[in-house]
Length: 167
Image: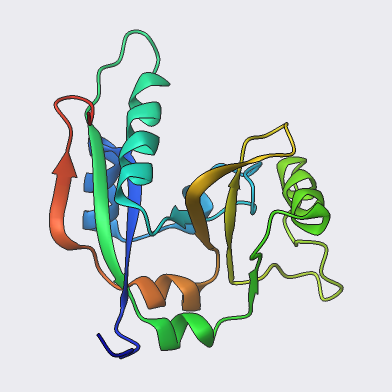
């Protein structure tokens, strides 16, 4: 098949309750956990299985009195809009990558940029923190700015759910 620059299908794993909020109110990057690999933002992956497992983990981490259902939202990310974002991409999990992850896991809000604003979009491997290793065949894309969120657009295909977890 010839390259066409078609949108990239990406997935967001969460709980059903959070997925319903995202569908009804839109993406809010500030709702994400702050001390994450690439900082606070809305995380997606190109791997459906990875998103399903992340959704399962979200349900398992609910308080013991709460019940939940694992859910995945799908998006068709516009490659041109994503490329227009101020972005940072890590191809390999080298020492720069691990330093960046540690910096963000310690609470950075600016990615250490001299201008005081974070990148709009960061893409790279998934860290097995605090170890200096990464998960094979897994990636993550952190959408931080409005332009990165716009590149995702609206969810496509409805909310996929587990029963209550994905297999």
